Image (cartoon, rainbow, N blue to C red):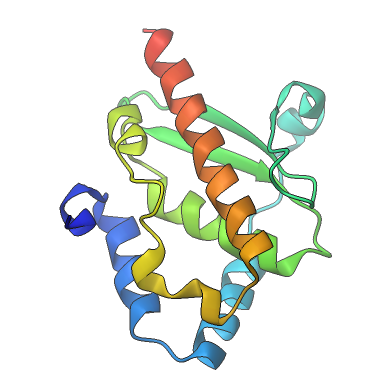
Length: 148
């Protein structure tokens, strides 16, 4: 099966970039993604206990999705700064899926990241958390679809 056809363009670009990197480049790029991770907006800090928790991650990960006026989805994530690997992985998803429709997000295969060969750079436990974040992003996309 060719997953390339079912990935949103920004996410496909990220997958393609990682697929050609060495282990060291993957680690450097993950750190760069972690460093570009936006802080939670003040209005959402007050509602953090209402955000979607991702129990698959050992690091506390919380996310919130909002439908934009054009029908696309924007994700907000809250992850401690002392967890750069998790922040980097979550940032890949947030960057790759930002601006997509709920249907596009729901259509992302759970194993989309396999061509990235992330197991060269991060543990299986981190990859399980990465997959967990995607599952919860998809659940949020379904919730937004149901709110039509």
